[in-house]
Length: 114
Length: 116
Image (cartoon, rainbow over the protein chains, first blue to last red):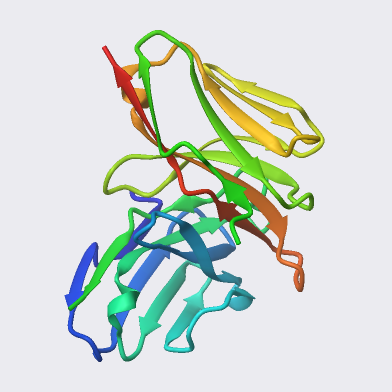
């Protein structure tokens, strides 16, 4: 069983489109995250939800909107896609205080905007 | 503003020898430091962590050393094995500020290659 699963694994779309990436975790964790890995390979946090509540919201364009229907799911919706949105997006989960034992990551969604 | 820096993008080590990966940080408010390992087309996998109040943590072949005065940490892998070839991310945990949540800030990674 995959602990943190993301769909789709690859996504190619045109500029201006709206797309969603889904994430589900079966670890019983109460906190979930979205990270973006850019072309320079930096992993940067975008959002975090704890028990469906937004608790971390970094400086991200408001075209990006996370949605958490329950604590096992965190989806990422992106409006009006731009070329600069091309990246690998990773979902992760942890217990609330994940600092000392880290997060469990999904395998990533490679988004290519053309 | 890179708060966690890995200045070596790549490292090549002979099998059986020690691999040493280095990391520097700037924020003294980090409470935990972590190392992640990443294979291609997979997500990062948690490897080992250390509390900011410790100076060493060991887990099998992996040891992390923390030098707070120098704001430096390192990961030692001994002996190095072919399966250790991967990208290693140094990371640090910090309270998010406006909540009691923590967030993890990553370095840019070091690609470790273990040669026969």
